[in-house]
View 1 (tube, rainbow, N blue to C red):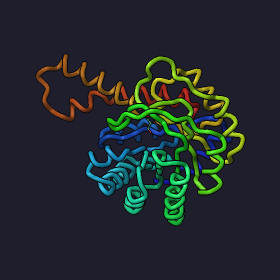
View 2 (cartoon, helix red, strand yellow):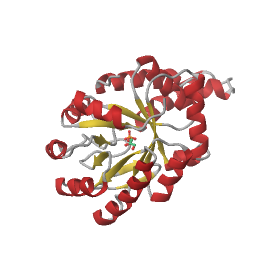
View 3 (cartoon, rainbow, N blue to C red):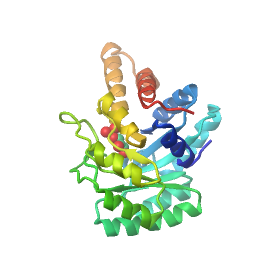
View 4 (tube, rainbow, N blue to C red):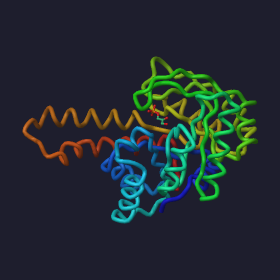
Length: 281
Ligand code: 13P
């Protein structure tokens, strides 16, 4: 069932566990995530970056593919189809019109006032259609969609201003996590995370979930994180498995065998991740 993320994240916030947001890249990726989460009977958020949306043909192709898989594979869990880092209002509207059930408007490259203005417009459009909205305060840096940027941490005051002026459903405050692999230990500001959580009624989101040590993931969840985004991690385990398969099966040319050789690696990693997150139905 395609749903927005509100019910699953509110339950996660109350139950002190996190819902996984896995970025998708193609049909196989989407199928493996849906099959594994359905087997485990846990809700999942499928994240689609603008780059991945272009790669897969566009928003209509993606909603068609996801709806088809839900039906053909008899998926019975709640599934949220979510734009990850939508960079402007038009992109978010396009995704919503194509049937996405959730959007992240990331106007964090603007000053707070402009970020709030853009976010508010997206919320007005999205909420009329039952679509949930995530926003970003501060700026989460690192490497994403091949773009490199640096981090600016969020402040409690800016998070409250964003929340009170927009009516967003979830917030990603930049607190030291980065997209892609970390250089050294991630330095997360758990104090501010906890204070923001105490002051905001909505669920908090942690981006850059790849490479954060297990104890810090658990600490982040105890400080109020309800949604954790994972992209690089699954890409990394998939490409390792496929590279090994190609090196040891030099005569294979069937793309289904080549792409599919990463299936088990993705599915096993998903199980480890959601066990760590404590994800529940
Ligand atoms: P990673 O690629 O570091 O897992 O981050 C994913 C993410 O935050 C997507 O928004």
